[in-house]
Image 1: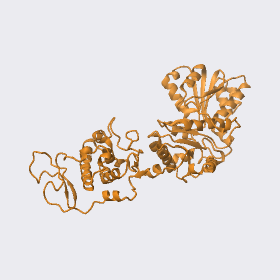
Image 2: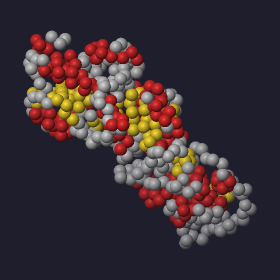
Image 3: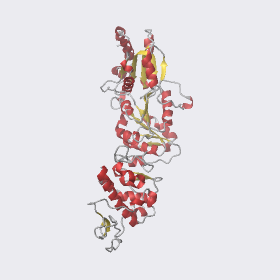
Image 4: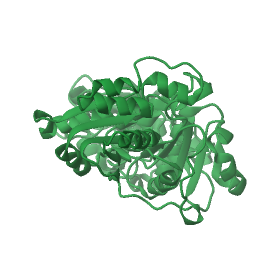
Length: 500
């Protein structure tokens, strides 16, 4: 069961907790007013009542030292409050207000937002059986009462401090934190759970045909979700499914996933949830033009700390990467694939891919002096360039990186040390695969030597619509341009010009 901090299903017991009963007739004795004395030595019945219940509600005196909290002191977890009466719960809420005010006054933090849900937190944990029942806080700033009631009161003074409690719900901090939230408006998407048997589910944003999920939907109609043109919801919905142990594949065009990037960071990567992103229309997209061009996904996904980032060089490798993503259960992952048809590669038996070793590339052609390291479908242009160079008695090494993150550091070191020239090629913007390779080589000290390193990426401009091969030519990423780059670096510029 998912319960949201902003929406609670009507419940008789919950209502009794949220809506105080008519105030009982009170006399003026200290005992009848449920007062808490500041110290046992003070016998002044009027001055000792720092927390007291009056006709118009609970009154708390914040002017002096922190009032005592005898009832709250007995509650460490929700189980400790199950047998409390409504009157006890009201007193517990009042004492929690005291605790939050004095705690935040020392540590800093979100005061008003947390004070606003004290009664709600008390009611939820009294009525529902957490953590089996899930409470998802739509506004993470409101989680302080929740933290106090779930075993973290003694650490509230560390909130937002180094190695202390997080200021928001955090899944790896407590089993009671069902879903992390630092922003608001994510709870509905995160809490929508599917009643399904198999763990693999698919989500798309009104692009079933474009992503190919229409075939999956026909075979498994109860396991495929079209959320409409709502990429942000799709990502957070997938995160919620992953938090419940399912295996969501979120299939969204590379350029459209940009709309949901905040959710990719906040709801998926930050919480290390194993959502699998299948990014269609990666790279140049021919007639669809710059609005659909997937130029930036390598850059914006590979900069995320927990994300596994991969790209297949052909349709057989795509199947293997689908299997790889399905096998990754401890972190998010993504793979990109281009618009259009495959190259006619031999497909795996029964169309079932084999999981790859994460972070391991492969060498496709052995050569000398020059190594071309391709990432993704552009590898086919690299192979074609190598075959063109053979006609000039130039034999180059071609490698398929497979992974941008984590990089195959062993393969990259091998290519850099065994060749004079290393060229990286990708169908993406600057800041992507080539940048990660150069950063690694810089940190490892290899760039301090004689290696000539070049990165071939999409130009720093938008490519207008047209035939895909024409776009590759305009971008300078065709096999012809790769061949010319090799010849220039080998000191054969006249031959290179023959390719231009």
